[in-house]
Length: 178
Image (cartoon, rainbow, N blue to C red):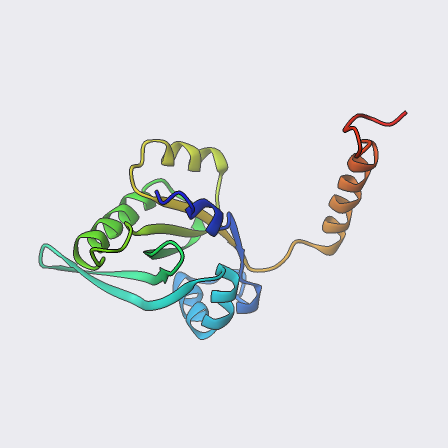
């Protein structure tokens, strides 16, 4: 994987701006992201350029469609994003790896770095992700999306908890204060 890729991508993306219903479909997520592309690009981060939606790939006489394709100027590579409205499943990596290979063989320019894939799932179990990625050779990342911020009361409780932990430690020495 490109050495700077981990600093470019997030573990989670907030797509509250899409105003998706609770039981939304993959097509709803896809259409919402396209309609709000500027906002989604801001959420992704700097240097992303939109290449296409349902980007066509042909392998062995069969047609495939990659959900979203971007180019990252800083990493100098294509970025494939596959959308999944459910939780992460290990088999999703096989499809993404296939798309990355097709992009590298048939779409990537000679001066570009190998493509990077991002599976954008509604949820993920960190242990399942770790196991799934442990033997994968494809430069793939798993990220969750959130359709809304956590409850305000929960955020306040977490901030108070964090504040209490930090207040118990002397910042000058890193030791508990007496």
